[in-house]
Amino acid sequence: MVVTDKVQKCSGGWKKVVKAFGNDILLESGEINRAHLGQIVFSDPSKRWLLNRLLVPHISWGIMWEIAKLWMKGCKVIILDIPLLFEIKMDRWTNPVIVVWVNPETQIQRLMSRDGCSEEQAQSRVSAQLALDWKKSKADIVINSSGSLDTTRQQFREVLRKVSEPLTLKEHLGSRDGLISVVVCTAVGVLLARRNLL
Image (cartoon, rainbow, N blue to C red; front, top):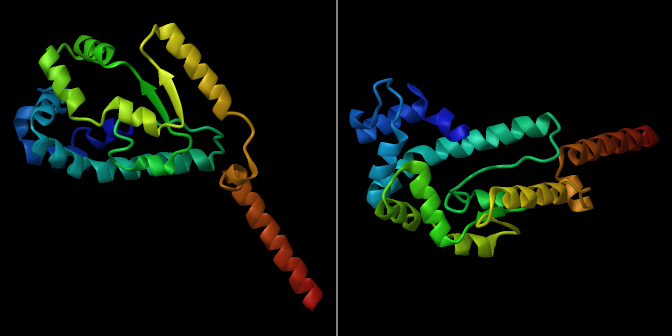
């Protein structure tokens, strides 16, 4: 959602991307042709680096803003879907890190099916990213998506149950409710101390 917002027609991110890559990446509607842009950036590492340099700051701040809004609303669990989580260093802000892993053959087949691309194009996209096996090794929780959609959904429900369990004291102190408790207790302590000193 955040990425899409950042490249919507006439947004700041859209203007930067169009300036850098030209009008050839636009659909007739003026929106960015994401499939065409993907072909460009996944076939040329320097163009991928340029796109990331243009958009990552917008995307990172957009994600942080959305998290802050949800936190202020009192959301207990916030799930982020960030394919480039490790590349943009957002893993340091997430707990736990959950990686949806799939075996390489299935990953290529699914990418070809989803995007209608050739095996070579799919392999190029996969090779341009950090290996899923490496991401898997850095994860706190792994969902194996190599099987059926029902099996993956079942694993997701189990992970959601697990992350919805009561927080440890340390986790609670970092939560919205914990922060409010700390502020209230500190304010009451200061008031009582001032009262006793007078």
